[in-house]
Length: 137
Image (cartoon, rainbow, N blue to C red):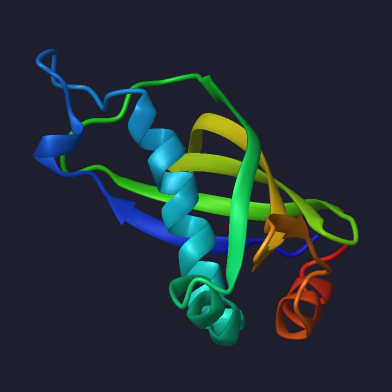
């Protein structure tokens, strides 16, 4: 299965008083990875989100932690498509430092259109559907 890789260098402001990465940053990095994927493979979707025409809403997210990361560590975040519905996407994330898994997570996102009545589920935009097809099993 093909994965999308995003490399992140941990900054001092992402660490806590003990010196390790604060747990919530891993969830934040999931968002960075997801947005970089859109910028690289579906830029029109990112523009629609920025214009307020489309919303990619996180329905659920989860993390498991195995080892600590510290300032200036290089962390590879590998995103894999695990589920694709008409308006939902399920992704898994593997966080690796030096080839060793330090955490893993998952996220489910819904694609919603902004209408006069509010947000309503909508099919995945064509560019996104095409990009995701390249990452399906």
